[in-house]
Image 1 (tube, rainbow, N blue to C red):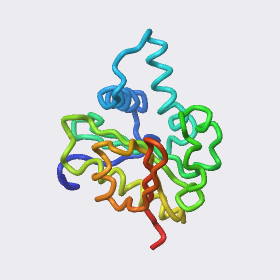
Image 2: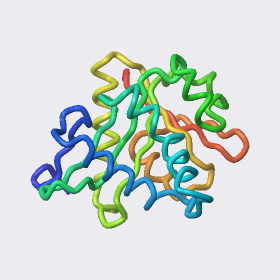
Image 3: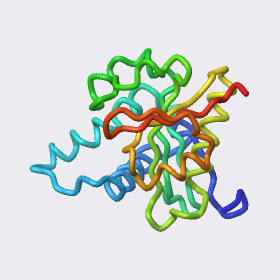
Image 4: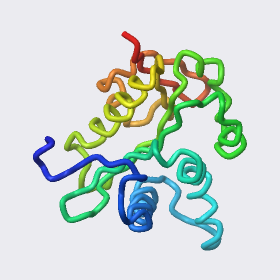
Length: 180
């Protein structure tokens, strides 16, 4: 997958139809999550809000979308450039504070999902690298993510330069330096 493949990376705030972009993000979110059953539509909406609501409301400039030539959202990255300075996320996201002692060295974090039909084509790596470039331009020393210690995505992140690892219980912190 290359720049000439018809996929462009855009900030949510740069897209003319933000509603359609967020609908695409929601579709990919639910195609990617392991949770498939909800007691009600409001329970489903609350789950989505837990994992994406703060980013949409407070950091829309740090949401990157991979948009295909036909306008379909093929993947997204929701980011936060100040993990320590975002106490609302600690209230929303379970176990957010588990790695708070690592936030000074790796202040930015992200969540990423790619539409199943677009996986294994380098799109996730492009989104991660774009967010990392944006963080580097802002002078941030590092970026991190948290995943399950034995998740299948660990190798992907390690190949993308996330080599500083710290496991606590079932959770794995992976950090990538940006100031080197």
